[in-house]
Amino acid sequence: MARVLVNVPKQVAKGVPFDVKVLISHPMESGQRRGVDGQVIPRKIINRFVCTLDGEEVVSLDLFPAIAANPFLAFSVTAEASGTLSMTWVDDDGAVQTQLAQVTVV
Amino acid sequence: MMRLALLGVVLLAGAAAPRSGYQDASPAIRSMQDDDAANPGFLWVQQGEAMWQDAGVASGRSCASCHGAATAMRGVAARYPEFDPAAGHPVTLEQRINNCRTARQGEAAWKVESDELLAITAFVGEQSRGLTVAVDTSGPASPFAEKGKALFTTRMGQLNLSCAQCHAERAGEHLAGALIPQGQPNGYPLYRLEWQSLGSLFRRIRSCLTGVRATPFEPNSADLVDLEFYLASRANGLAVETPAVRP
Image (tube, rainbow over all chains, first blue to last red; front, side, top):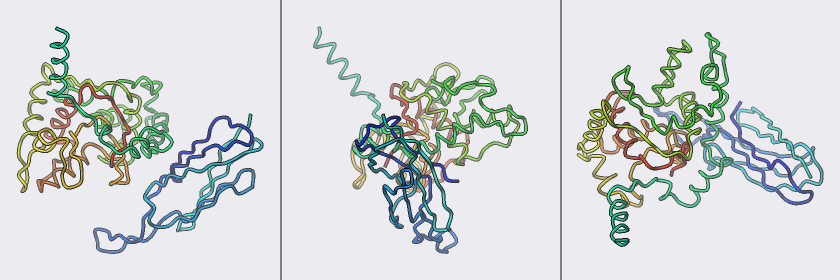
């Protein structure tokens, strides 16, 4: 399980966009580098990131090898009602990790 | 009289005036450091916070069992490396933590530059964020600080350069395209974009020494600790920035 920092405002206003920031601990190994033994270090990156709000997709990304380690993702979301943000990302090795965050509309 | 006093202040500031690398960093890097949600160092701080509470060791003792809330650590990082009267020499924060780990928790010491040691050091350091660095080099500690200063001004390696030639005499000038910082250690462990990771002062000094083609100091060696001790005392007056972000 990678370490993750998710930042969502404690309370958001109905219909007003707010920022979601996600910082994921990940090596994002590009597959271009060689190790001390001269062998190519196999590619290992997060290649897909999807965020849904109560099942409705709000953002989805395809990530590529040029993205640095520990990717920081920030995007805006508009909520009409309180709900759960579900962030899911897929690793090259098939591992899937999901992180949840509560959105409270006032 | 007023003008004389002002002049005095300016002269004093010009003589030593420690300057944090933060002040010379680009606005993008500064905003990254300022926003806890964007600062990758907090990935390690978060891990360290969990480790502080975790009693998952054989002795059943967590950091919190003895020290209580982590807020009790506020101010600690600001005065390290600190002279340890029992040991008779200065110890770094990492050494102090590893000392706790072996003596109190009965566990094997963490390796230098391991994620665990970086995480707990960053977490303890973060408690002192914003406080002023105040390393005490008086009394019995002074020979060690003097030795550190001697190392700082000693030419080393095939390039035959001392730390001071760049980081004191030419601080603020440029080495190729890069600005030469004063080399103030007020934000360690810090996240370097070049490393794409958190790193300790040991790693930073190792990079510098490899750069001048000298043999790097062994981790935890007396020379390295003395140098770190002197460097920290040189930063007295700056704010602790742990975990800082640097290019």
